[in-house]
Every structure is written in C-alpha cells, then in structure tokens.
Length: 265
Image 1 (cartoon, rainbow, N blue to C red):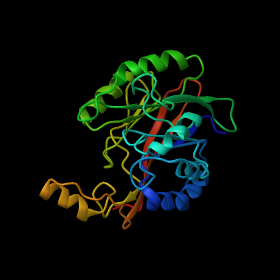
Image 2 (image 1 turned 90 degrees about the vertical axis):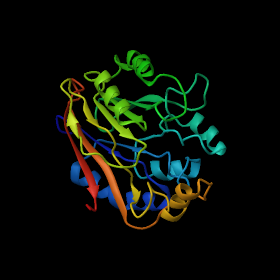
Image 3 (image 1 turned 120 degrees about the vertical axis):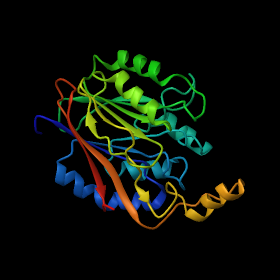
Image 4 (image 1 turned 45 degrees about the vertical axis):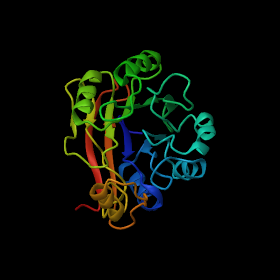
C-alpha cells in the first residue's frame, strides 16, 4: 500500500447493461489505479429501479466493497429482508427511525490497518420529505469519528444548491462528498479548503442513448402526454462514470479527485 488510500466510486449503475459494463471494466481499473476500496451506487441495478438480493450479490461479487443507494433503493418490497441483513448495502440514513436497512457503516480497508466510514444520505429539495440530511450527518459523524478519520458520503439529491451547501457544511469533517441521483456528470471536481473532495454529481454507468438511463421513447411520451409510461432500461451507447479519490489515511484529508469516464464523448 502507498501512503494514500485510493478509492473508486462508481456512479449509479443502471440495470444489466450498466452491470455488464462494470464487470468488464472494473478489473482493469483496480489494477491500473492500485485501488484499495471500491464503492458503487446500486439503487438502479434491478430493472432500473431498486435492488434485490440477486443483483446486489452480483455487484458485490465484482469486488465492490460497499453499495450505496437513494430514493429507489427500497422500491422492490422483496429487497427489504436483504437490506436488513446486509450491512454493506446501504440506503439513506435519514429515512425515519425504524426503516429497514442500514444507512452507514465502518468497514476495514483490505490490506491495510485502516477503516473507512461510508454514509448514504438523501436530499429533501424536490424529493420525498424525510429527515434532515445535515443533522443526520452530524449524528453519524459523532458516532464514527473515533473509529476512523476517513469518512465517505454519497449524497443522493436532486438540487444542485442542496448538494453544494451540504459539501460546505461537512467540509473538513468528511473526506469525500459525491453527489448522485441526477445521472448527469458535473465538471466541478475539487478539493474544498478543509480537505474534502467534492463533486456535485458523478453521473451514471449505463446507457447514454437514453433519458437518464431509460429508453427515450417512453420518457418523451411521458413529457408530451403527461401519462404513465413503461420504464425500460436503455441498452445503447454504454459509458462508465466514476471518480478516483486519493486520501491521507492518517488525517482523512483528500489529496486529489478526478473523473474516470469511459468512453469519453
């Protein structure tokens, strides 16, 4: 191991096409970047919405260490038992108390003596009304800060302003804040002045010949006619979207963040 922890986060993996692309490319990236830990957002792995056991297991079998989620994580009722029993498959921590599943965890980093805290939160602007993600971070941080200096947050939110505000709120406490949910990669990869690596949205791993991962035809009709349409996962123009972060394990401060996007547009 080098003096930095190298972490890869893979943006929302969309259905089987996204899974197959991840399966193809991830081993190369693990070797190329000498990765220590891999996290991926898996809330869209099952037919584009939700995560059931068989799909969660096949992602973890790719040597992904932790799966994060979002507003679709619990869409499939048959996933409830799996989420309760699997501590490294997360749903947003700020769901009301008593909701099934886990919102955070502290995990060993293989091949090292270090641990990483991984926290999943969901925004509230233009989304379901749930508990405050800012205060939820405070509560979790106070619980895990004595176990590890490395704190990773997947902030699953719609509004750009909410994501940026959250990044500044946790600046210097979180090592990394990555935004997910909108499926469109943003260009604001940076290290905030407190040492927090930040990007507003990582983007998605799946079909870009689509409307945020779903086939275009149904999405267009939904806007034109304002009627329900069948959701079908897009299958063409597949792209892998991720971020690579280097973190000082002793201080928890990020040293670098850069996009990993293949193939480029």
